[in-house]
Amino acid sequence: MDISLVIPLYNEAESLPELTAWIERVMKENGFSYEIWFVNDGSTDNSWEVIESLRRENDCVKGIKFRRNYGKSPALHVGFGKAQGDVVITMDADLQDSPDEIPELYRMITEEGYDLVSGWKKKRYDPLSKTIPTKIYNATARRVTGICLHDFNCGLKAYRNEVVKNIEIYGDMHRYIPYLAKNAGFSRIGEKVVHHRARKYGKTKFGLDRFVNGYLDLLTLWFFSKFGAKPMHFFGLLGSVMFVLGFLAALAVGGGKLYALCRHLPYRLVTDIPYFYLSLTAMILGTLLFLTGFLGELISRNAAGRNVYNIEKEIL
Ligand code: UDP
Ligand code: MG
Image 1 (cartoon, rainbow, N blue to C red):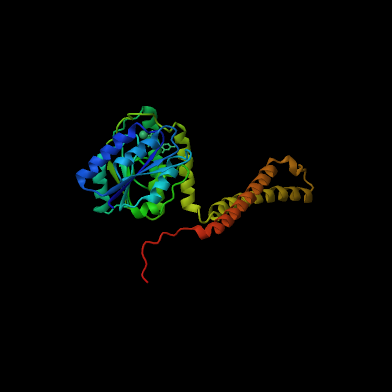
Image 2 (image 1 turned 135 degrees about the vertical axis):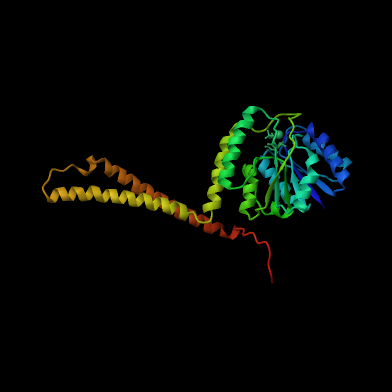
Protein backbone atom coordinates (compact mmCIF):
# COMPACT_ATOMS: atom_id res chain seq x y z
CA MET A 1 0.00 0.00 0.00
CA ASP A 2 1.34 3.46 -0.90
CA ILE A 3 -0.18 5.79 1.67
CA SER A 4 -1.77 5.62 5.11
CA LEU A 5 -3.54 8.75 6.23
CA VAL A 6 -3.88 9.17 9.98
CA ILE A 7 -6.49 11.73 10.97
CA PRO A 8 -7.15 12.45 14.65
CA LEU A 9 -10.49 14.07 15.33
CA TYR A 10 -12.50 15.40 18.18
CA ASN A 11 -16.02 16.62 17.37
CA GLU A 12 -15.48 17.25 13.66
CA ALA A 13 -18.58 15.52 12.24
CA GLU A 14 -19.46 18.28 9.74
CA SER A 15 -16.00 18.27 8.14
CA LEU A 16 -15.57 14.53 7.64
CA PRO A 17 -17.65 13.87 4.48
CA GLU A 18 -16.10 16.82 2.65
CA LEU A 19 -12.59 15.82 3.74
CA THR A 20 -13.06 12.19 2.73
CA ALA A 21 -14.45 13.11 -0.69
CA TRP A 22 -11.50 15.44 -1.30
CA ILE A 23 -8.97 12.78 -0.27
CA GLU A 24 -10.66 10.18 -2.48
CA ARG A 25 -10.46 12.53 -5.44
CA VAL A 26 -6.75 13.25 -4.95
CA MET A 27 -5.91 9.57 -4.47
CA LYS A 28 -7.83 8.54 -7.56
CA GLU A 29 -6.27 11.23 -9.75
CA ASN A 30 -2.79 10.04 -8.73
CA GLY A 31 -3.53 6.32 -8.71
CA PHE A 32 -2.37 5.77 -5.12
CA SER A 33 -3.42 2.74 -3.09
CA TYR A 34 -4.32 4.04 0.35
CA GLU A 35 -6.15 3.74 3.64
CA ILE A 36 -7.64 6.47 5.83
CA TRP A 37 -7.42 5.92 9.58
CA PHE A 38 -9.87 8.15 11.39
CA VAL A 39 -9.01 8.17 15.08
CA ASN A 40 -12.09 9.38 16.91
CA ASP A 41 -10.71 10.84 20.12
CA GLY A 42 -13.82 10.47 22.28
CA SER A 43 -16.02 12.83 20.24
CA THR A 44 -19.33 13.71 21.84
CA ASP A 45 -21.03 14.58 18.54
CA ASN A 46 -21.99 12.05 15.87
CA SER A 47 -18.51 11.82 14.29
CA TRP A 48 -18.42 8.05 14.75
CA GLU A 49 -21.72 7.51 12.92
CA VAL A 50 -20.41 9.66 10.09
CA ILE A 51 -17.24 7.54 9.91
CA GLU A 52 -19.34 4.37 9.83
CA SER A 53 -21.43 5.68 6.96
CA LEU A 54 -18.30 6.79 5.06
CA ARG A 55 -16.95 3.28 5.46
CA ARG A 56 -20.08 1.82 3.84
CA GLU A 57 -19.23 3.84 0.72
CA ASN A 58 -15.48 3.24 0.68
CA ASP A 59 -13.50 0.25 1.98
CA CYS A 60 -10.37 2.37 2.40
CA VAL A 61 -11.97 4.20 5.32
CA LYS A 62 -11.01 2.69 8.66
CA GLY A 63 -11.68 3.95 12.16
CA ILE A 64 -10.71 3.71 15.79
CA LYS A 65 -12.92 5.06 18.55
CA PHE A 66 -11.55 6.01 21.95
CA ARG A 67 -13.90 5.58 24.87
CA ARG A 68 -13.07 9.08 26.07
CA ASN A 69 -11.08 12.10 24.98
CA TYR A 70 -7.36 11.42 25.45
CA GLY A 71 -5.81 14.14 23.28
CA LYS A 72 -4.23 14.50 19.88
CA SER A 73 -0.96 12.76 20.78
CA PRO A 74 -2.50 9.47 21.96
CA ALA A 75 -4.77 9.53 18.90
CA LEU A 76 -1.77 9.87 16.58
CA HIS A 77 0.13 7.19 18.47
CA VAL A 78 -2.62 4.62 18.09
CA GLY A 79 -3.14 5.56 14.43
CA PHE A 80 0.59 5.16 13.78
CA GLY A 81 0.47 1.68 15.28
CA LYS A 82 -2.14 0.70 12.68
CA ALA A 83 -0.71 2.39 9.59
CA GLN A 84 0.37 -0.06 6.87
CA GLY A 85 1.30 2.25 4.01
CA ASP A 86 4.88 2.91 2.88
CA VAL A 87 4.31 6.59 3.54
CA VAL A 88 2.24 7.75 6.49
CA ILE A 89 0.63 11.17 6.28
CA THR A 90 -1.11 12.93 9.16
CA MET A 91 -3.55 15.78 8.78
CA ASP A 92 -6.13 17.57 10.87
CA ALA A 93 -9.76 16.71 10.34
CA ASP A 94 -11.00 20.29 10.29
CA LEU A 95 -10.26 20.96 6.59
CA GLN A 96 -7.52 23.43 7.50
CA ASP A 97 -4.97 21.16 5.80
CA SER A 98 -5.34 20.54 2.10
CA PRO A 99 -5.26 16.96 0.72
CA ASP A 100 -3.88 18.45 -2.51
CA GLU A 101 -0.47 18.45 -0.81
CA ILE A 102 -0.43 14.65 -0.58
CA PRO A 103 1.21 13.78 -3.94
CA GLU A 104 4.13 16.17 -3.41
CA LEU A 105 4.67 15.01 0.18
CA TYR A 106 4.64 11.41 -1.03
CA ARG A 107 7.19 12.25 -3.71
CA MET A 108 9.51 13.99 -1.25
CA ILE A 109 9.56 10.92 1.00
CA THR A 110 9.90 8.28 -1.69
CA GLU A 111 12.15 10.09 -4.18
CA GLU A 112 14.09 12.70 -2.22
CA GLY A 113 14.81 10.31 0.61
CA TYR A 114 13.41 12.29 3.53
CA ASP A 115 12.47 10.47 6.75
CA LEU A 116 9.99 13.13 7.65
CA VAL A 117 8.54 16.11 5.81
CA SER A 118 6.78 18.71 7.88
CA GLY A 119 4.25 21.17 6.51
CA TRP A 120 4.88 24.86 6.84
CA LYS A 121 1.78 27.04 7.02
CA LYS A 122 3.64 30.02 5.62
CA LYS A 123 0.46 32.00 5.20
CA ARG A 124 -1.80 31.19 8.12
CA TYR A 125 -5.49 31.75 8.41
CA ASP A 126 -5.70 31.85 12.17
CA PRO A 127 -6.37 34.70 14.63
CA LEU A 128 -3.40 36.95 15.56
CA SER A 129 -3.57 35.74 19.16
CA LYS A 130 -2.35 32.44 17.77
CA THR A 131 0.05 33.40 14.99
CA ILE A 132 2.26 35.74 17.05
CA PRO A 133 2.95 33.39 20.00
CA THR A 134 3.47 30.64 17.43
CA LYS A 135 6.36 32.57 15.87
CA ILE A 136 8.12 32.89 19.24
CA TYR A 137 7.41 29.28 20.06
CA ASN A 138 8.89 28.05 16.79
CA ALA A 139 12.00 30.19 17.20
CA THR A 140 12.59 28.66 20.63
CA ALA A 141 11.98 25.15 19.38
CA ARG A 142 14.48 25.71 16.54
CA ARG A 143 17.17 26.78 19.00
CA VAL A 144 16.60 24.02 21.51
CA THR A 145 16.20 21.15 19.06
CA GLY A 146 18.65 22.28 16.41
CA ILE A 147 16.13 21.36 13.72
CA CYS A 148 15.54 24.05 11.14
CA LEU A 149 11.75 24.05 10.80
CA HIS A 150 9.46 27.05 10.64
CA ASP A 151 6.34 25.28 11.83
CA PHE A 152 6.92 22.42 14.26
CA ASN A 153 3.29 21.84 15.14
CA CYS A 154 1.84 21.66 11.63
CA GLY A 155 -0.78 18.91 11.57
CA LEU A 156 0.16 18.01 8.01
CA LYS A 157 3.26 15.83 8.00
CA ALA A 158 4.55 12.86 6.03
CA TYR A 159 6.76 10.05 7.31
CA ARG A 160 8.45 6.91 6.12
CA ASN A 161 6.54 4.06 7.76
CA GLU A 162 9.59 3.02 9.76
CA VAL A 163 9.69 6.42 11.47
CA VAL A 164 6.20 6.27 12.94
CA LYS A 165 6.79 2.77 14.28
CA ASN A 166 9.88 3.94 16.15
CA ILE A 167 8.64 7.00 17.99
CA GLU A 168 6.27 7.17 20.92
CA ILE A 169 4.00 10.19 21.06
CA TYR A 170 2.51 10.55 24.51
CA GLY A 171 1.09 13.41 26.57
CA ASP A 172 1.08 16.50 24.36
CA MET A 173 4.27 15.64 22.52
CA HIS A 174 2.69 15.84 19.05
CA ARG A 175 4.07 19.39 19.00
CA TYR A 176 7.59 18.01 18.85
CA ILE A 177 7.36 15.00 16.56
CA PRO A 178 10.36 16.18 14.47
CA TYR A 179 12.42 16.31 17.68
CA LEU A 180 11.24 12.85 18.72
CA ALA A 181 12.16 11.56 15.27
CA LYS A 182 15.57 13.20 15.44
CA ASN A 183 16.22 11.67 18.86
CA ALA A 184 15.30 8.28 17.41
CA GLY A 185 17.97 8.75 14.75
CA PHE A 186 15.84 9.94 11.83
CA SER A 187 17.65 13.10 10.88
CA ARG A 188 16.64 13.68 7.28
CA ILE A 189 13.89 16.12 8.10
CA GLY A 190 12.45 18.30 5.37
CA GLU A 191 9.90 21.02 5.05
CA LYS A 192 7.27 21.91 2.50
CA VAL A 193 5.22 25.07 2.29
CA VAL A 194 1.57 24.04 2.45
CA HIS A 195 -1.71 25.78 1.89
CA HIS A 196 -3.65 26.56 5.02
CA ARG A 197 -7.30 27.45 5.22
CA ALA A 198 -9.52 29.03 7.83
CA ARG A 199 -11.53 26.63 9.93
CA LYS A 200 -14.84 26.03 8.17
CA TYR A 201 -16.87 24.13 10.77
CA GLY A 202 -16.61 23.73 14.54
CA LYS A 203 -13.99 25.48 16.65
CA THR A 204 -10.39 25.02 17.74
CA LYS A 205 -9.71 22.49 20.48
CA PHE A 206 -6.67 24.19 21.93
CA GLY A 207 -6.61 27.37 24.03
CA LEU A 208 -3.76 29.67 25.04
CA ASP A 209 -2.55 27.15 27.62
CA ARG A 210 -0.99 25.38 24.65
CA PHE A 211 1.93 27.79 24.83
CA VAL A 212 2.70 27.27 28.49
CA ASN A 213 2.43 23.51 28.13
CA GLY A 214 4.38 23.66 24.89
CA TYR A 215 7.37 25.23 26.65
CA LEU A 216 7.24 22.78 29.54
CA ASP A 217 7.16 19.87 27.10
CA LEU A 218 10.10 21.29 25.18
CA LEU A 219 12.07 21.49 28.42
CA THR A 220 11.17 17.90 29.28
CA LEU A 221 12.21 16.61 25.87
CA TRP A 222 15.46 18.57 25.94
CA PHE A 223 16.28 17.17 29.38
CA PHE A 224 15.35 13.69 28.24
CA SER A 225 17.43 13.71 25.12
CA LYS A 226 20.45 15.05 27.03
CA PHE A 227 20.26 13.31 30.39
CA GLY A 228 17.42 10.79 30.14
CA ALA A 229 19.78 7.82 30.30
CA LYS A 230 22.28 9.42 32.68
CA PRO A 231 20.47 11.67 35.16
CA MET A 232 23.47 11.64 37.50
CA HIS A 233 25.47 13.69 35.01
CA PHE A 234 23.01 16.51 35.54
CA PHE A 235 22.04 16.25 39.20
CA GLY A 236 25.43 15.01 40.36
CA LEU A 237 27.26 17.98 38.87
CA LEU A 238 24.80 20.53 40.27
CA GLY A 239 24.75 18.76 43.64
CA SER A 240 28.53 18.59 43.90
CA VAL A 241 29.00 22.25 43.03
CA MET A 242 26.38 23.27 45.61
CA PHE A 243 27.84 21.05 48.28
CA VAL A 244 31.43 22.14 47.73
CA LEU A 245 30.47 25.81 47.81
CA GLY A 246 28.51 25.26 51.04
CA PHE A 247 31.32 23.24 52.57
CA LEU A 248 33.95 25.87 51.79
CA ALA A 249 31.72 28.58 53.27
CA ALA A 250 31.21 26.46 56.41
CA LEU A 251 34.99 25.94 56.69
CA ALA A 252 35.56 29.67 56.42
CA VAL A 253 32.97 30.41 59.11
CA GLY A 254 34.27 27.71 61.49
CA GLY A 255 37.92 28.53 60.77
CA GLY A 256 37.36 32.22 61.43
CA LYS A 257 35.76 31.44 64.76
CA LEU A 258 38.58 29.06 65.85
CA TYR A 259 41.19 31.59 64.82
CA ALA A 260 39.50 34.29 66.89
CA LEU A 261 39.23 31.94 69.88
CA CYS A 262 42.94 31.01 69.77
CA ARG A 263 44.08 34.59 69.43
CA HIS A 264 41.65 35.78 72.13
CA LEU A 265 40.14 38.20 69.67
CA PRO A 266 36.53 39.36 70.01
CA TYR A 267 34.24 36.90 68.21
CA ARG A 268 30.61 36.46 67.22
CA LEU A 269 28.47 33.35 67.63
CA VAL A 270 28.54 31.25 64.48
CA THR A 271 24.74 31.53 64.32
CA ASP A 272 25.03 35.30 64.11
CA ILE A 273 26.91 35.08 60.84
CA PRO A 274 24.68 35.00 57.71
CA TYR A 275 27.24 32.85 55.85
CA PHE A 276 26.53 30.04 58.27
CA TYR A 277 22.92 29.75 57.08
CA LEU A 278 23.88 30.14 53.45
CA SER A 279 26.44 27.36 53.69
CA LEU A 280 24.00 25.10 55.52
CA THR A 281 21.33 25.60 52.86
CA ALA A 282 23.81 25.02 50.05
CA MET A 283 25.03 21.76 51.60
CA ILE A 284 21.50 20.46 52.19
CA LEU A 285 20.41 21.37 48.66
CA GLY A 286 23.57 19.82 47.26
CA THR A 287 22.91 16.56 49.10
CA LEU A 288 19.30 16.51 47.91
CA LEU A 289 20.33 17.09 44.30
CA PHE A 290 22.84 14.29 44.60
CA LEU A 291 20.23 11.93 46.01
CA THR A 292 17.87 12.93 43.20
CA GLY A 293 20.60 11.89 40.78
CA PHE A 294 20.93 8.49 42.45
CA LEU A 295 17.16 8.00 42.39
CA GLY A 296 17.11 9.00 38.74
CA GLU A 297 19.82 6.43 37.98
CA LEU A 298 17.91 3.72 39.86
CA ILE A 299 14.74 4.49 37.91
CA SER A 300 16.50 4.57 34.57
CA ARG A 301 18.31 1.27 35.40
CA ASN A 302 14.95 -0.26 36.18
CA ALA A 303 13.58 0.85 32.85
CA ALA A 304 16.71 -0.32 31.03
CA GLY A 305 14.88 -3.39 29.71
CA ARG A 306 12.56 -1.05 27.87
CA ASN A 307 15.30 1.12 26.40
CA VAL A 308 14.94 1.16 22.67
CA TYR A 309 18.11 1.42 20.69
CA ASN A 310 17.03 2.06 17.19
CA ILE A 311 18.94 -0.46 15.06
CA GLU A 312 18.91 0.41 11.38
CA LYS A 313 20.69 -2.61 9.86
CA GLU A 314 22.47 -5.82 10.82
CA ILE A 315 24.93 -8.11 9.10
CA LEU A 316 24.68 -11.69 10.35
N1 UDP B 1 -7.96 16.85 18.16
C1 UDP B 1 -8.05 15.57 18.74
N2 UDP B 1 -8.13 15.48 20.09
C2 UDP B 1 -8.12 16.56 20.91
C3 UDP B 1 -8.01 17.84 20.32
C4 UDP B 1 -7.93 17.95 18.94
O1 UDP B 1 -8.04 14.57 18.03
O2 UDP B 1 -8.21 16.40 22.13
C5 UDP B 1 -7.87 16.98 16.69
C6 UDP B 1 -8.90 17.95 16.10
O3 UDP B 1 -10.14 17.32 15.91
C7 UDP B 1 -8.24 18.32 14.79
C8 UDP B 1 -6.76 18.33 15.16
O4 UDP B 1 -6.64 17.55 16.35
O5 UDP B 1 -8.47 17.35 13.79
C9 UDP B 1 -6.23 19.73 15.36
O6 UDP B 1 -7.04 20.42 16.30
P1 UDP B 1 -7.49 21.94 16.08
O7 UDP B 1 -7.92 22.16 14.68
O8 UDP B 1 -8.48 22.28 17.14
O9 UDP B 1 -6.13 22.70 16.35
P2 UDP B 1 -5.67 24.07 15.70
O10 UDP B 1 -5.84 23.96 14.22
O11 UDP B 1 -6.52 25.13 16.31
O12 UDP B 1 -4.22 24.18 16.08
MG1 MG C 1 -7.31 23.29 13.13
